[in-house]
Length: 322
Image (cartoon, rainbow, N blue to C red; front, side, top):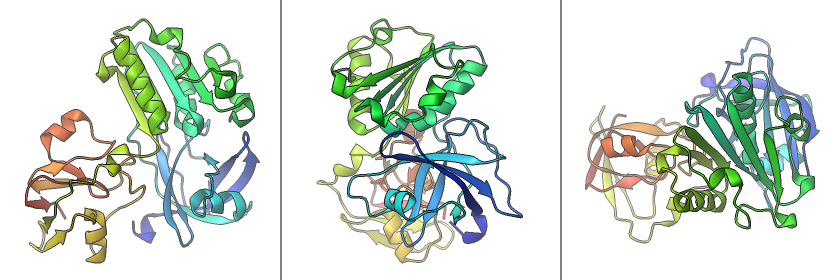
């Protein structure tokens, strides 16, 4: 992403938000504007000497006045969460991207929201929006122990209090140990929305399948992409730039993004795991080997887009709209 496209912001507030979490309020610097966003949106925060890191927006105001993000300190982290927890101070400046939303709230007459750990960040904003629309919903929030609960004051506010259910693993109330009653009776008019780590999402999918929910009723965002580990059978292929005709070899150990960056091709890149959608690029010719968590099944079937950071090619040559 070009520097001119970034938004300079200042850290207005930093607060502890449950054990291991901090919340940051970011305000625009003079001459800049914070675009409004819808629940489920995220921004890239550019960490000095580390590059972009992706965080969901979880403020109550939808933008304009300030953006709020909540960051969990990753174990043994030396990257984004370590910097934001241990080196950043109130008054410091950062650069961020404009909001993007690849995890929008679907249309439904009822919602079941499932948050695993820091996955509460996009779902909290969704829950508050649903409550404002007077739509029936439940928010099930799973954490290891009570001390790690983020946004406790917002979860217990009158708007959400009767709809939020807190589950603690140290009390044997994990999603694996106990299935909530709301999932035991499938309902065609209910949308299930989830955010959490791979294992949490997989467990939820298994429960829904067992109780005969339709797969299309679940939309989710997860922290990492399990497909990235499916690289034992990787084959080399060529990518071609539609604008110039240049061709580049992508070896079994390389990603398309790595090859393009080495060739000085300007592309957007953020999570590098196929979960954010920053690097989605149109495909002119060829058949992508989709390994992302962003494109829908319908979009994958069309084979007209690809995530450059993790997906590959089933055809010898992939012509990209670059």
